[in-house]
Image 1 (tube, rainbow, N blue to C red):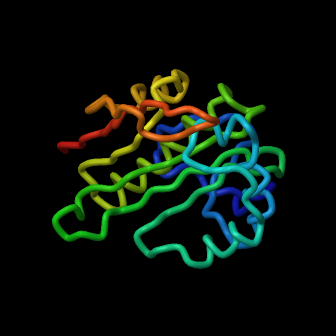
Image 2: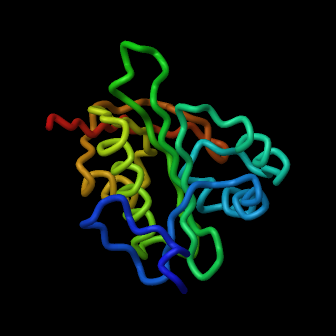
Image 3: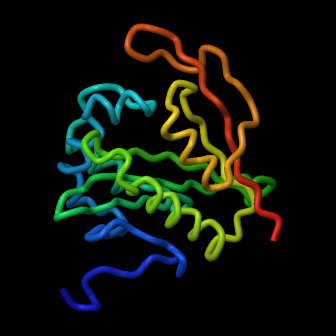
Length: 181
């Protein structure tokens, strides 16, 4: 592998799992992303519904807003995680954005989510000067909540019956990370 194969993390203090690379998603990634987001555990922790097609994912990638930054994490040549950052287009909220992410069912707990969130927060801090980054997370997703808290997010609200998931309504937390410097 040459120095040109995998860009280094934007955050010089970042520690990624061995062999992990993070890059922008491309239309060619659509089949792998569709397979990832259709996994039951991945879907359970997100707002996705079952049975996304590669064509649907490819069209979404091709129509991406200029305010959106979508990353994929690759391990051993396979896409094992995705993370997106969307800057709010309203000028009064230009200082803020939201993130969404997920990791392959078989790769949870291996540092991939931590690497992805670190990379997307480096974009928010070092390139977009975002002061506020928001997210929502289901209240029963303890692993994700812990990851977000470790990265400076705090719970700001409890959203009752936030979404319908697998036959039942579930609550979510609204969380945000504020940056003052």
